[in-house]
Amino acid sequence: MTLSQRESSALSPREVRALNRANRLDRNTSGLCSEFVQANLVVLPLADAFDFLRFCQYNPRACPVIDVTEPGDFEPKIAAPGADLRTDIARYQLYRDGELVAEQRDILDIFNGDMVSFLIGCSYSFEHRLAKAGVPLRHHEQRIDGAPMYITNRKCVPAGRFSGRLVVTMRPVPSSLVSEAVSVTARHPESHGAPVSVGNPQSLGITDLRKPDWGEPVQLHAGDVPVFWACGVTSQQIALESKVDFMITHSSGYMFVTDISI
Amino acid sequence: MTLSQRESSALSPREVRALNRANRLDRNTSGLCSEFVQANLVVLPLADAFDFLRFCQYNPRACPVIDVTEPGDFEPKIAAPGADLRTDIARYQLYRDGELVAEQRDILDIFNGDMVSFLIGCSYSFEHRLAKAGVPLRHHEQRIDGAPMYITNRKCVPAGRFSGRLVVTMRPVPSSLVSEAVSVTARHPESHGAPVSVGNPQSLGITDLRKPDWGEPVQLHAGDVPVFWACGVTSQQIALESKVDFMITHSSGYMFVTDISI
Image 1 (cartoon, one colour):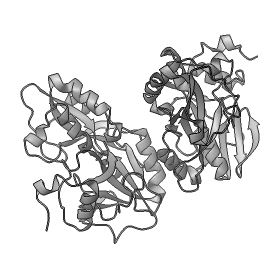
Image 2 (image 1 turned 90 degrees about the horizontal axis):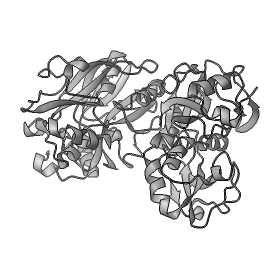
Image 3 (image 1 turned 180 degrees about the horizontal axis):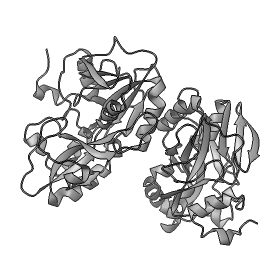
Image 4 (image 1 turned 90 degrees about the vertical axis):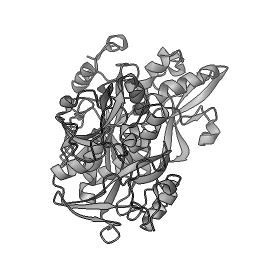
């Protein structure tokens, strides 16, 4: 039995993780646990881990590191002591040689002692703060779970085998509230921080906002400006472009919910 | 020929590095290039690099990472493009099996393709900001180059082979200016950020402020409170406590000067 949208909105991070562990909460985590930091998961072999952690260090807007485990450990001791990264997310994706090969509800059968898990910040974490500051969330108004994501023409700083393009989320913001949106999100570097670009999709190589690379397009209201934040999906994009041998991630929108307060 | 204190105070980061490269500036970098971030250097074998970078990730107050190189690279491409970490610091220390075995003016003879260099933030970077905000720097008033450093009883979060105690710097601050000192330094997480403790040396296991573990003691004026910031020397302390096989660092107080504006 899975829970309704309404029943799940009041859950604690620990409850969300326990329900995921029992395969009872198969939903996008947008709007869940709004006072807590949510995170992207990336699991890599130890041989790639140092390069990837350097990649995150070089590209902190796209890949702010919330936690990284000891090799072989599946407990994120800083972000959520007691949690199990093999089961506590609703859906996982498995990549081999840079291609998506499977989606599954847990990774108990694949995870081994040679793997390192990274938790990377997610912009879901600051949406509640934007709303509180009076910035409308057009995608929520339009009943779309997550903000649309676009691959840009901006190259990330490479590290070892990891290189590729920056992925961004787009949220329409009324022009009079852009300053508010910038200052609210700048206070959350662990969740991508301030926008990387405001008002000009072309400057990022985005030619058509109606065609996101992930998610559904969101309509701008009259007077809205498109505002772009770096997105944790960048880590998946660079893994694909770099054709990594092996990687596990969460499925897009099905984030890991940490115990860290925003 | 080395430069006088007065001649060197107006140098740019690039000039400081070039003078160090020519062995012409054998001085503590406190007060140099006050508008630029200074950094601790840690050089480790690649085999230890992932654990050390995780250590920094787990202990960001003590070890904020300013840059980390590709293995074998001696150019810190983010912090100071064109610089050479093998020569651009005045003095280096070499550790083997957890013991200091040599101090030298460059590391051209030791550095090899298996090594990774880390630049870790330094509190020298925010001292100019404190002074500008009206917070007196008692150690400068007392003609002491750097703030005194103390090993605390506080354990860092371990990562792989790296574990050990937090090292702090102490600056006496008039009680009416403690809030100012906290808020100024909180804006500089890349340089250790806000204090880790205020007003009570005993809470950190420091029994006698007159006996620092590095540097000279600084006198408190009437009405001053001792304020403690995490210190990058923590990285040297944990390397010693963890008995790392091999490590190179700068000599205490002889920092690497980056091109990053504060």
